[in-house]
Image (cartoon, rainbow, N blue to C red; front, side, top):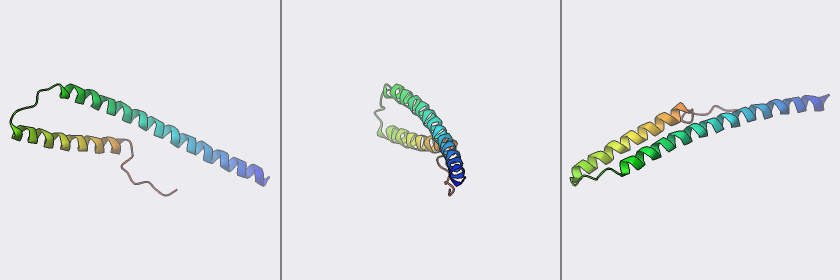
Length: 88
């Protein structure tokens, strides 16, 4: 009887773990799509000419840094990765 109870508890834990793994796999798939989109955008932007004026280049680098870090944080938050984990 006790063995059956433990087996049932383990089955529940395994099902929960499997559900979490599947959710994480879905998040990774979403992140890969987002990264692929970023790669396509950056590849297209790489073909743009670089301005000769260094102040323009500096402004573009700062703008890019702010945009990409904000987008990355937003995406991580959307996926639930930026939220603190609760104890098990």
